[in-house]
Image (cartoon, rainbow over all chains, first blue to last red; front, side, top):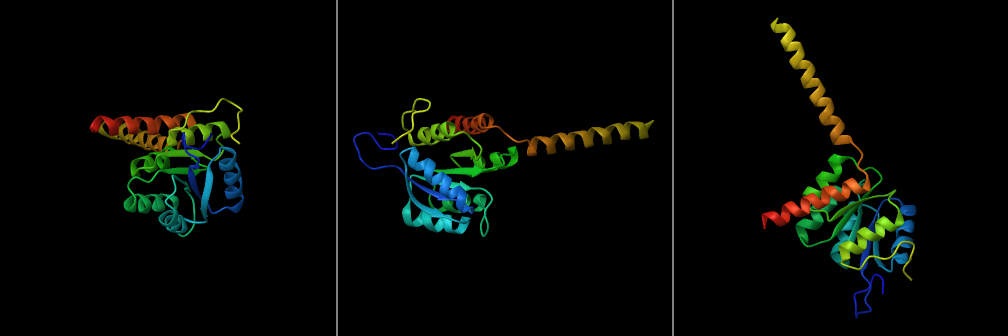
Amino acid sequence: MSGEKQGETRKHRVVIADDEPHVRVFLRFAMNNMGLEVAGEAGNGQEALEVYRKLKPDILLLDLNMPVKTGEEALKDVLAEFPDAVVIMLSSSADRESVEACAAIGATHYIRKDCPFEEMRAILYETLGLPPQPEGNAAS
Amino acid sequence: MSDKYNLAAMLREIQDDEETHRKKHQQLSQAEIRRVFADRKSKRENRK
C-alpha cells in the first residue's frame, strides 16, 4: 500500500537529480524502500529540467549543488514551465539563506542529506498525501 | 565626543553585519527547515 494511491496500483513516481552517482544509488534504494517508483535520474540541473519535461513525475528530488545548472536555477526553470510541479530540494548544507531562497522560489520542501530515513519518508509521504508509516516499518 | 559616538555607531554596525552574516549562514536542522516551509505555507494560505 505504501507509495500507492488507495484503490490504485500505480506507484508514485519520483525523479532523482544529483550529480553524484553514489547519492543517486542511495536515493533509488531509499525510494524503492518507501514503495515509490524512480521514474528517471538526472546528473545536473539542465538534465533535471529535461527529464522532468519528459516524465512529469509526482516529485522531483533536486540536489542544490550541481554542475551546468544549479538546483536553484533548475527549480526556477521547472516551476516557470510547470507551476504545479512538486520539487523537493536536497542538500548536504542547509544554511538559512539557501533554505529560505528555495522556499521563496516555490520548492515544496528541503531535505538535508543527513536526514534520517524515517524523517525523509515522513516528508515524502506528507507531500504525497500518504498516511504516515509507523517507525521502523519499511514499505515493501 | 562626536568621534566616540561615531565609533560606537560603527561598532554597532559591524556587530549588526556579523549577526546578519551569522543568521544567513546558520545551518538549520531538519526541524527548523520544516518550520521555514510551514511558515511560508501558512503565509501563502493567509494571503488567499
